[in-house]
Image (cartoon, rainbow, N blue to C red; front, side, top):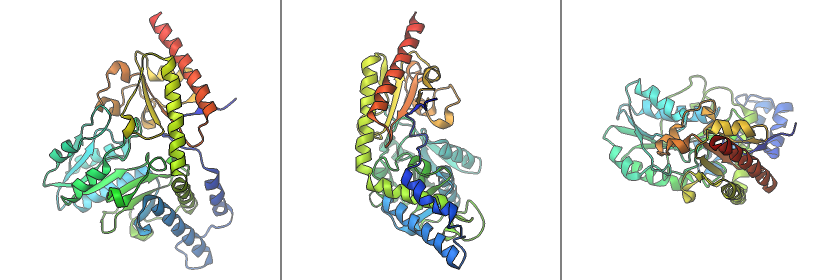
Amino acid sequence: MKTPIYLDYNATTPHDPDVISVMQPFLTEYFGNPSSSYLYGDQTKDAVNNARRQVASLLNCDPPEIVFTSGGTESNNYAIKGAAFNYQYKGNHIITTQIEHPSVLEVCKFLELNGFRVTYLPVDENGIVQITELEKAITSKTTLITVMHSNNEVGSIQPIEEISNLARGRGILTHTDAAQSIGKIPLDLERERVDLLSIAGHKVYAPKGIGALYVRRGTQLSALIHGAGQEQGRRPGTENVLEIVGLGKACEIARRDLKKNMVHMKKMKEKLYSMLQEKIKNIKRNGQQDRQLPNTLSLSIKGLDAHTIISKITDRVAVSAGAACHSDKIQISHVLKAMNVPEEWARGTIRLSTGRMTSEEEVDLASNIISEAVLKLLETNHG
């Protein structure tokens, strides 16, 4: 059977062939423990340090500020719990938004059960948090602001530089979940000046099960995992050398090809939208186009259910009915609710996300398949 056209790059990405290539020797030849003080250990330790430099170069920070983790979820957990508990003596108030990933929202719920108070900021109709609302929410007890860099469902890009400037002036730490931004838009920690930033390897053509947390020099975090002294004592456990090497290479490629990839992904996204809009009348896109990831297209189709649409095309085109973590649920996503998308539109929302490998031929074919399925469903509904 021919594989479906893949238009769900926000859910996960294929492995880049060059990433697979650099990982291969660490499956077959270089097996040493990086903590060992002989040749086998030196080989893998050097590989880990090189990957740390590659990740730091993409983010424009110092290599020692990079801590390798098992992925975006662990990075978010470590950043938020670590900061909250370490700075609890200063205060117990955390600010986040209503549209965060579950790996942020669930952590905040956990903290609320453990003596913390959390403010969940609203967003506007484009999914953007307002600085005035943030400023109003700050109290003398606020120790951490965690706002995602860009949203996984609609692609809205948050004003992180403004947020970090506001927080820094008040002695408040900032964290951003940048899992969706990595490799799609520039990430510059000298400009955005957050204290903590999370990334996930499988969003940038590296393997699943690897990620990183940027921890600005001088920022202290309570331990999430207890053990030996790996990762400067921040993340104990023998390093996942194979996948760390893969993440490093993926970040090197992302930095090298960022401009080219941004242009390509946006071109494919806009072509896809243009073709669908031409064929389907009751369709609208969600989000503000100049404040959105270049690859993310959130489309609402009035009067239909997203899961019904997907069931008609799933063997030919792979798309999402919202965040992947919610793909088995029919209720309207928390992101669309926060954006006040009317229910008759929100129920029919699908997310299409293009990637480096997306071709014009795939876009042409996918738009025909999707529009044909939607028009048949609309005809049935109105028949």
